[in-house]
Length: 128
Image 1: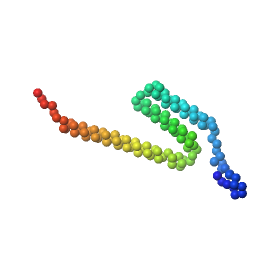
Image 2: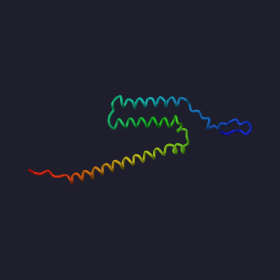
Image 3: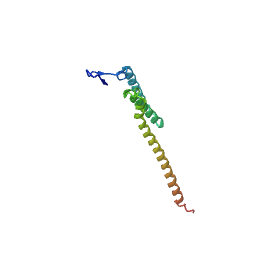
Image 4: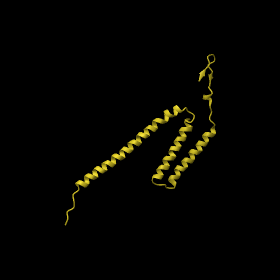
């Protein structure tokens, strides 16, 4: 905010005075309610397996994205600010995914190594 020299009355710039219509917030709130109902429907209809986890995580990401975009005003921020806030978690999730892949590979390799040791060392059954 700028202050005038004589009266110290605040002067609000045009970009600071933007008021978002309440209808946007109500529509997003209803959409969040619908997405939550769909998430609960996954449990109600007893969806199992990978489809269950995919749907739960999908609805979770959609709801989180809507909350961040609208209620935290990310939609109306500059692109640099959006990158500044969203890029570190994306990089962290990427590193976690790489670590998970490496852990699976290491677990597989250990299984192959120890299985090979068991096959070589295993005594043969005597023939009668």
